[in-house]
Image (cartoon, rainbow, N blue to C red; front, side):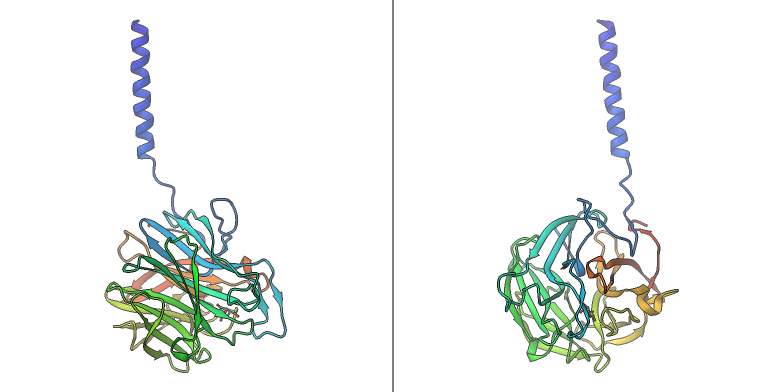
Length: 341
Ligand code: GAL
């Protein structure tokens, strides 16, 4: 009897000890290794290019181009290399390190060759924002023909961040071209569409309507005649920042940073935010989005795509932290870095 009590006593202590170890165990380091192949929780390479991230109710949702493994060179199209448009993929994560594939939330339309979403067309640079009034998730995406002459912006909506998204159609905002693009939702609930226009010569920034599905007609022309594309925007200490690339197709070029007191401008160019070796070619990559990390005041992650034009679905992700030096954003190469540092 005595022995049984003793064993029970020992067992209780062992349980308490194990529970303690579990509670004290440090979470796995959230390490980002730019430029390597990143896998989802099922072990497949993440296929979400030219993308952006939405944080909603404790989860990050990464939306990006789902590229078919069909890259080929077409001498008759302006960009040469292209892959089938596979729609828009979504991955979810609680910590920005482990990503679960949620599916192709805006699927291609394989049945109708005239559809904007047919795999023969261009479906690029999707971005999603949440509308608090309509409680809808609103996606804007670059829609084009294989020669990039259509220059439309497409819009889709969903009731859930993981879709399915319903495609509403595409347009030329304010009657003008829309190619590389992003969205920005401000603290006051207003949302803006930022897009390369006028044959990519000039970047337009347009205010969206209350439900974020249309333009209001209020827009500004920025960087006139300067050929900026791949815009990524963020707000820091009350100022707005915009990081676009130059215009050289799949090949990397020098990024630029501009600052403004209002999203509609005026924008003042403050130079290349990338510093150190590789800075002139944005470390071989091109801007797509800047993510403010939840719960870490001032922590910003610059997201870039390192395109592999001869095998587009093998294009890599380059995420780097943005530091501020003398009030200016600075991005330096890191072989590996920890999101919690
Ligand atoms: C880039 C653009 C990419 C893609 C590519 C095609 O300029 O940023 O999103 O459209 O051209 O060549």
